[in-house]
Length: 500
Image (cartoon, rainbow, N blue to C red; front, side, top):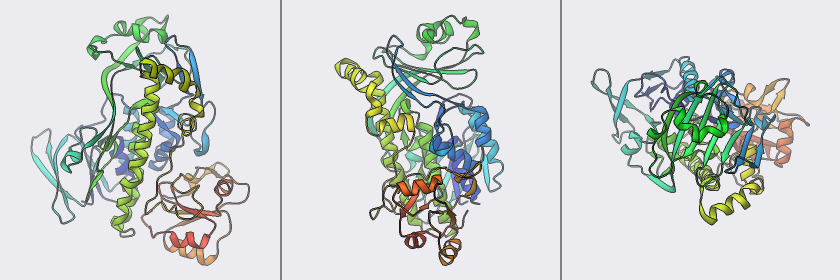
């Protein structure tokens, strides 16, 4: 078996779908028979929306998701003192920049869509017990059928550990979690109601060190609250709407309790952690197995889907023989610093909400209302653009033309209602603002690289010009490998990649 994926949640199913689209044979092993029924993640941004487009479920996701207006910070009296409004703007990628959803609905869409991949098999009701490498480029995965109790095993070339925070795969490769010094207990509440709550249609962050909280609408009739738990409190103290009213009361004032259905109440410990190693030879960690992010900027699930998008095409290229195995070294080199940067940003936002004492008051009174002026922070809270990937063998930052390298090529309009993602096929693309020669086109075609020439005045032509480049070589995950004025050099830099 070329690839075994441990974990059939969104990260594992995304990796399996992407590999399946490249024709890679995969087996997904999951302990559940179906979709885990409880809502967990509720947000993804416009960059990750593009991953859903690549999976083929963008229209279905649009039908079950709800764009959110942005973020407002409110004080303990529920007065807004900082607003980051995204109203009416889809941003550079053509999708809403903040999207709320119910995770079980998203997972069901993903699993149904996975059925179209004939090279992928999903097997549920199994418990993976061990992952071992034999030194011969083979990995043995041991698992137990949870229905029969029978032990089984399978040999794979590569194993992806997408099995969450308590990852068996991470333990098997001897990777440990680095503590980034953030741990808080929170109460997570999901409520359904046909009654309009008449609240501002964005995320509310209650910045109260006595009881920090978050409120957001995640669907037409679904609402989510998160409250920091006090010492001595547990979820068992809040098992009814009546018991929750002292917490949710400001948002549901005047609504009878029988009009509010308690879908779930659970206790979570929010942590900031990063695995010290994301790879041991042919075994890789993705998603919560590799990183845990406090939820304050909604990047937990996003980070996991970015992992899948980053690794899948590289692995497909290695398995097809197009790419050298050394390109797999770029996975951790690119993703780990990116994940660390967003975790640190989430910690900063969390501190502004929850820290007590004089330091906390300073953050809330002085810094929080001016967050839009902090370099990089407004981009994260409003513009949604994440940091560029650092230099690697597949992010060529040599030379003076670095502005575009490592960033995502915008999903810009190409013609009529068509955008970049609509006209590209999942391989490398040379986007050029000047005509290329027949010889250069033949070279690129022979290597499996598409050519997209863009004319003056078009969005991508302006993007190139702003980056002081004549052309850019775009990777299958939308990332700029290299950009510059020397189109011939860019053509030569295109690797062979025919998996698409």
